Structures are given as structure tokens and as C-alpha cells.
Amino acid sequence: TMLLLGESVLSLLIVDLSEGVEYYATFFSGVVTVILLEFLHFRSQPYDADHHALRRSRSSGLMFSLLMWFYSVSLIILGTTYKMFLFEFVYEDEEGERRNLSALGRLLAGKTTALRFSSEDRQQRIANFFSGSFAIVFLSLDLSILAHGGFGSNLNRLRGVSGTAKLAAVMLVAVRIGLIGFVASLSQYVTEPSHLAITGVSCVFCQLVLRSLLNYVLPDGKEQEDNALERV
Image 1 (tube, rainbow, N blue to C red):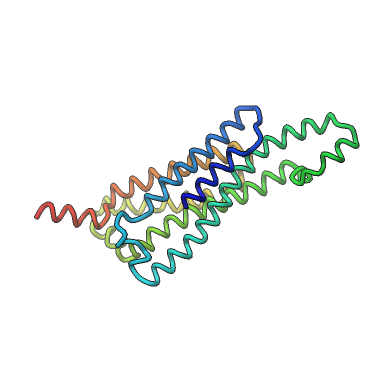
Image 2 (cartoon, one colour; image 1 turned 180 degrees about the vertical axis):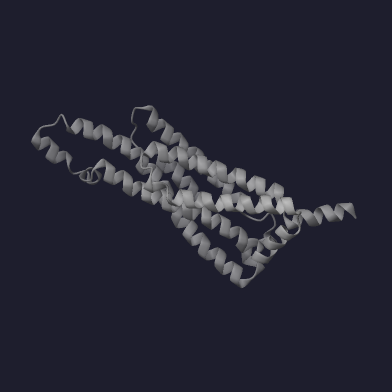
């Protein structure tokens, strides 16, 4: 996972430069997104190796392995989309230069495959990959928590709190599910690269806030055991 996230950052650094605030807003949004995704990844893992899905049972280990396959592929696609966001600004500069070329020059410049498509078509394709891969990343991390702890264990956490805390936990989980749905459908109404990049980093930040709030409202079973031992 660290290799995939590092590759995402590296892919942002090997793109031709372009002028404009939107280019740098997209670049730094991509870097911050990768950093927050790394933090979100570790927040989704157990603190003790014995609580890992691979050690808990064969079925949970299989589920975790399948989730990590989809998660890894989605991280690769997500990192590529951020690189393609930056290329959009480079393509805009190239298209501006192409307007000043002769007919022969425009023909020779047409060797760039991406410029054979219209700007709207390219951005829609990139947005589809971006929103789809982002949603799968969020979904894979949430399901990996279930794989580590098990559905029954997480349900017991809900049963062990008061009615108000239980209602708050259910609402927070519903918001997290809604956030995944929002990210999955994002390409249907946003295609501008800079807007997508800023929305992406905002969604990761919201995911981290929701995780923190849920852990506060619904303490982990291990924390409850430790508190009980301290009281004894």
C-alpha cells in the first residue's frame, strides 16, 4: 500500500509544468489527498497483529485478501487520474499553441493521442475513473474493518452503548455510506479537474472526521475491556 501511495505522489511530480492557480491547486490537492489516504489506511488496520483478519479466521482472511486486491487496483487508478488532471492543463496549453500553427503543423501536432478527443470527452472519462476508484477505496477500507473485527464484534459495540450513542452511531454510519454514494456519483455533475481534486481531498478529510466521531461515540471493544480491567 505504501508503494502504491508513493507511486501516486511520484506520478504528480513527473508532469510538465503549467501556469495558473488551478494547476497548483490540483497538484497540492493530490499530494494532500495521498497523505490523508495513508492516514486513513492505518486507521482502518488493527493495532494488534492477533486482531488482523488473516489471523482471525480463514473466511475473514479470504475476504481481506479480495478487498486488498480491489483496493490496490483502485489506488493505482486514483493516482493515475490525478496525473491526468495535471495533464489536462498541459493539453490546454498545447491546444492554445496548436491554434497558431499552419495546417501542416496542426497535422503533425495531432500525434498526441489525448488531443484526438475533445476536452469535454477527456474530462468526463477521467472523472468517471476518479469517482469510481475513489468510491472503491472508501468502500474497501470500510469493509476491511468488518473483516478484521467481524460483523458480530462490531454489532456488539453498538449494543454496548446507550440509546443516544447508538442513534448517533447509526447516523454516522449512514453519513459514511452516503459519502461513498456521493463520491461514486461525483462524475455525473463535476468534471472540472481542479474541482474534482479539491472535492476529493475534502471527502477524505470528511471520512477521517466521521471515523474519529464514530470511535468517540462507539468505543472499540478492546478499549472497553481495558477500561473494565482498570476499574477492577
